[in-house]
Image 1: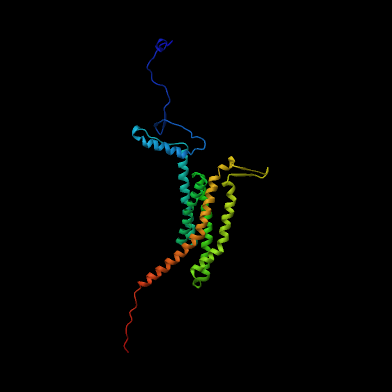
Image 2 (image 1 turned 120 degrees about the vertical axis):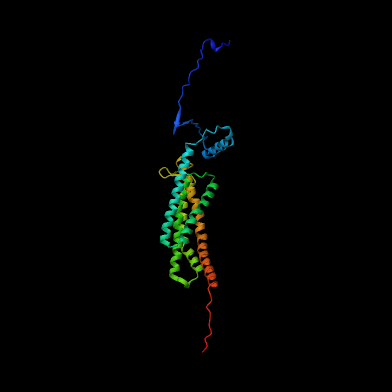
Length: 277
């Protein structure tokens, strides 16, 4: 039957033996967990943060909760990529201003780069993929170079035609000729890039040695976010380049004409004196 444990065990109060971990001279307790396969780590971390915020009153104010591991690495990568993107835009702006000698042209090109991120988000939403900080961020930075190239081709041709014809041709006609002459180079750049990246977007692995095609291979899953970001952003930015950029060039000319008209209204009229002979 049941036997009291005091019959053969003597209980004596002694200090507990354990390991105390410290970081930056502060005591640290580590709580580790792994998410299920296929689950989004960021979403699970956000759920834990929301739970901690909801039960903040029940936690001792002296306790500080910090998230390490994948969440810390993701934040570090996000900070690095944001700084890299800002530096890239700044260097592009300096080069464009010095070459075009126009702040408006540089601003127009950089605006197309920033607006291309809308196409990246749309592409990821359509394919049902999360925005990966590392791969999608690198895709956005790589996409900026292609977009700048397309806009430079368009704006440089417009400036060349304007110097060639001057006031002998209307600005609207110059813009239409620019679009007609540079439509093929812009479309060729877009089509070749999109077609070349489609196997990565579709997670298609082509083995030329064994002549086999597999879908969803592990080697293709790492690059699918980068390829999707470049493809969707490039398609969206091509529409902006062929439609929005010519409209912005015409807007500059319309604003210049309006400003000249307004200045002409406020010019003082010359007084005509009658001279008696």
